[in-house]
Amino acid sequence: MQEFIELLKKDKKLVIGLMSGTSVDGIDAAIVEVTGHGLETEVDLIAFETFRFPTSVPQRILALCQPDTGRVDAICEMNFYIGHLFAEAVKHILQKSGMRANDIDLIGSHGQTIHHLPKDASADCNDSRYPSTLQVGEPAIIAHETGIPTIADFRVADMAAGGQGAPLVSYPDYLLFRDSEKTVGLLNIGGIANLTVLPANGTFDSVCAADTGPGNMCIDAVVTEITEGEEHYDKDGRRAAQGTPHQPLIDEWLKHPFFQLSPPKTTGREMFGHTYAIECLAACRKHELLDNDCLGTLTELTVQTIADYIERFITGRNPIDTLYVSGGGVHNQTIMRQLSEVLANTAVESVDSFGISADAKEAIAFAILANETLHGNAGNLPSATGASVRKILGKFVCP
Image: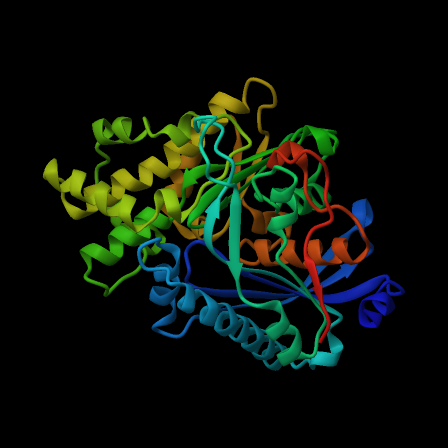
C-alpha cells in the first residue's frame, strides 16, 4: 500500500479514468490532472481516446449479460481478458499522448457491467432475489500490466449499504457543476440515459439522480438489426429524422413498470437490452412502420421518457435552468433537437459548452472517484443512489 500512501502527499495528480458502458462499444480512457480533493476538486483533461473492442468482443460481452448464455467459465475468462484490454487502453493513450506509465499516479476503473440487479422498489416483499451487481475487467491485471496503482469496483460498496450502485457520477457532478444561483441538470445518454439534478445552492442531500430509461441502447440494436450488421447506430440521428414517430406505440411502451417508479432507480441491459429492442421492432413491423419510422419512434421514446421523468419528479420542486448533455446521445441531432423542443423552458446544451468533454465526462468522473477514494472521502450520494449511508467506494490494487 506504500504506493497509495505516497500519493497522499501530492496535491496534483495525473489520474487515468477508464469506463466501458452499456453500449459495449469500447473503452473510454481519459488522462486527467486532478488538483485537490472533495469540494476543492479541480480537473483538467489532458488526453482522451475511445479504444474500440476487438471485433468479437462486444458479442462475447453481450453473451455474458444473458442468463441463458453467461456461462461461469466464460465470465471467469472474460474478467481477466477485459482487464487486459483495459490495460492495453492505458498503454495506447500513454503512447498517443507521449507519456510514460511512471508519469501517471493512479488509475480509476469502472469496469464493464455484465449484470446489474438493483433493489426493485416495485417487487413483491417476498421476492428472494438479492440485490447485486457485477463488473468485469480484473483490476489486478490492469495494475500489473501497467505498473500503476489502481482503484476499481466502485459500485459494490454503495449496494452493500442498500443503494442502487448508480448513478455514481452524481458525486463528481456535484463537485464540478454545482451552482449557487441556478439549478443544473446533467444528462448522460449512453446505452441507458441517466440524469443528475443539482438544485441551486444545494447540498449533497439535495441532489436527485436516477436512470430515466433507454438511451441509445434500443436505437443501436434496431439499427444493427435492420441493416443486417452493416451499421450499428443512427449517425447524427439522420434515420430517425426521416421517420415519423408512432405515438400509439410510444404510449403503450410508456406503461412499462420502470417508468412508473420514483427515484432513486437504475436499470440496464437486463431490462432494456436486445430482447426488449427486438420486441419493439416486432411491434413496429406489426403496425407496418417503415424502418426509419421505427427508429423515429424509438428515438421519441428516449426523449419522452427523459422529459416525462423531469416533469413528474423534478420540475415541481426544482425546475432545471440548464441541462448539460453528454454521452453518445449528444451527437444524435434528432435527440438534441427534440429535447430542446419538449423542454422549452430549459437551456439544453452539450456539456462541451461548460468546458468538459461530452465524450470523456464519465471517464473523468471515475478519475475523480479514484482520487476521492484515495483521500478517504465517500464517493456516493444516498439521495441519488438510495444507500443508507455515504461510503468510500472502490478497491485498492497495488501494481
